[in-house]
Length: 257
Image 1: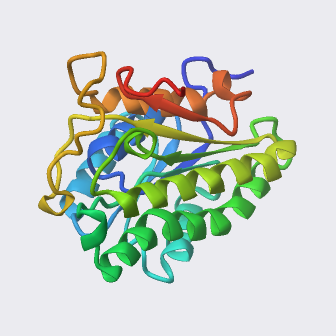
Image 2: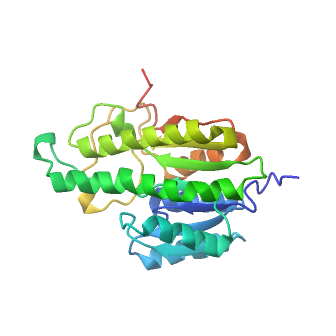
């Protein structure tokens, strides 16, 4: 019988960019529901290890793997790390991303390719590698598996100086919906969560905050726990019939009109 207090007990999640901000909050949320977590970061070993320690304090397992998500061998390294630590992968959350900001006519091709490589190509390659492992782990299980990608409201509303980011995120939505279509018969769900403005720490390379969403209905930024809460719902039993969706957590910025 499923433990409603720990509905993800016995599951394992691989979460990219999970040493801080939304990724960290998501890792803690899924761990609170009983999932073992592979923490991924690029270089900040201290932050990743602290997140892993906090997860272990919840009574589940955590492992850390640092790698540049754009490296050709990153998908294999991450999935191997999860399989070595937990023996299975049930959930993949593609959270790692970069933001760059430049007027359309001033975006260097190198910068465009950097964003596409990180925000679109890296999740595509990781999911190609991880999906067979999700299928294998859930062959005789009604859970099926979960794929969650992270988008952004800026791809849906008037946005300036983010053409490369918008292009990557809309492409990632297409990948997400294709996975939902091709693997739904196996019980695997795939959804995108699109945050609006979130109260996170930001690197200088991200530039100033986008003006998109400046007219949101709620006069505040989201807390990372509010984004993580939706991902937790989608990964749990109550999210088992939600698939192929882009769910906006943006304080009423985008109505889908």
